[in-house]
Length: 254
Image (tube, rainbow, N blue to C red):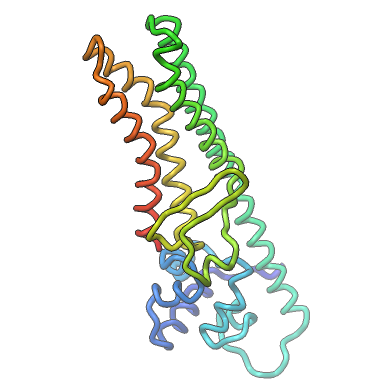
């Protein structure tokens, strides 16, 4: 089976981009991807998604077949068998990328499961061994663990990994899916920053899930009767931190 030469593809892509006087960032902006993605293509670390081949070829002034071959061709028609081999190779590559995405998804889900167990185990220890009553925990530790479980499960199991095309074509700062809603005022959501936003939110929620019971216990070790403002501050940091992480990632990769 004909295989796409990543080294040749990357070198050809870089040469065409430079011939047109475009930086990696400018090409990335036209395709609504990150400049890091373009850099990986040119360094032969990965190949673009099949859905990007036509717009990429249009931006560089070549045909998709020329792009996949890694060279300009004569205008006469290419053998059908060779064209089919190139298309099959690109589709096979997409299948490999989807498989890799499945591996990453399973790792995220495993991380969520382990962090959930750790958070719930700590909460149980506070109830059974720590001498704290349910009334003391329900408005702080139990509530925070419940929120992290709810939103963490959505982010690790149910959220859409790719935004609709309208997000790349318009300035939209809100996203909703069923009962879940994200509104990052001042951040333009698109398929360049969306994966980074999701990663930042997942990471923060998993950390909070594991650390919040311990930090809450630490506060009660410092103060026999800790001021309500201290517990409130801890809860606010945990809740607002996920939004701050999302906004930082969104702006950085916007």
